[in-house]
Length: 158
Image 1 (cartoon, rainbow, N blue to C red):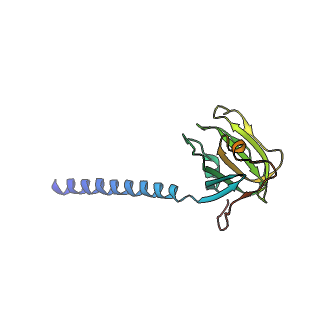
Image 2: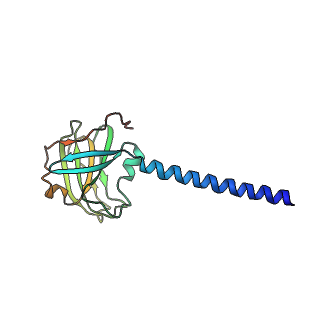
């Protein structure tokens, strides 16, 4: 009997340790998402990079707040229309589409978290989408034709 209860206890302890390690890996990997310095208009942002389909699909959905200097850069492996929706968004955004030269080709200002049925799509193809806190475009002199400055050299874009 004692041997069976010892084995059961060992199995429980190993299970708890595995669960703790798996949680730690998830937390560390989410914090290791690339952070990039982004300059656009008169703004300087600390941006996360979404360079995989799953990161791009998630975007900023679920975020309950976004500070004035936070941004997300969605990088695509090739040019396309790159439509954006506000599904599961809780904060409004300004959204910029950039071509491969990082020039702004299309802007949506103050995309509301309530616009869940709206698909925002640029008129021409781009390579990057930048999500900024709502009001950034007007407050920081961001205009179509302006260039954004950031480096994602060495990042794998899938």
